[in-house]
Amino acid sequence: MQNVKGIYQDVFEGLGTLGPALHLEVDPEMSPVQLPPRKIPESLKQPLREHLDELVKLEVIERVDYPADWVSAIVVAPKPNGKIRLCLDPRPLNKALKRCHHPIPTIDDVLRELSNAKVFTKVDCSNGYWQVELDEESSLLTTFNTPFGRFKWQRLSGSLLQERFSIND
Image (cartoon, rainbow, N blue to C red):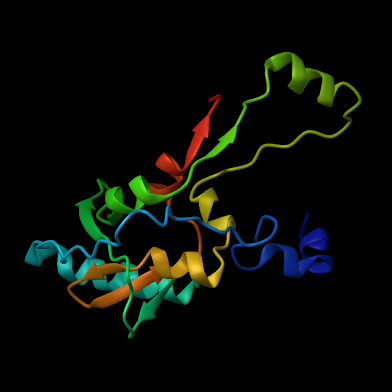
C-alpha cells in the first residue's frame, strides 16, 4: 500500500474533486436575503475560530471582504468529542434555488451495472460533499456571517446539499 501511495501521491493529498464545479441557479423572481449573525456562546467562540481557520486552510471556505447579495447565518453546536459542528442556515437561499431532479436507480439497475465488476471498494464519505467544488458565482451565494467576519463556501456545504437535490421527483 505504501508503494501505491508513493507512486500516486497526488491522488492522496488534499480533498480531491468530483467533476466540474457545480453551478447553483437562483430563481430571478426571488429577492436576496442577508441574515445577521446569530449569537454564539462565548465558550464556543474560540473553537469556532479554530474550525473556521481549519476550513480556510483546507480551502473549503474563503474569507469575504466585499458585498454579497445572499448572506446566511450559522448555528454552532458542540460535539461529544469536544469539537464543534458548523451548521449553515441557508433556508432563504434554498427556497430561491432552482431544483435539480435526479431519479435514484433501482437495485436492479445497480446490480446490472455491477454484473461484470471485478474490484469493489468501500469509501468513507465523511464530508464527501466537500468533493464538489462550487463555481465562483455559486460560491458567492453561500456567504455566511460569523462573529469573525464573513466567509463563503468554495465546496458544497451539507446544508445546501440536503435541500438542493430532489430525489425521485
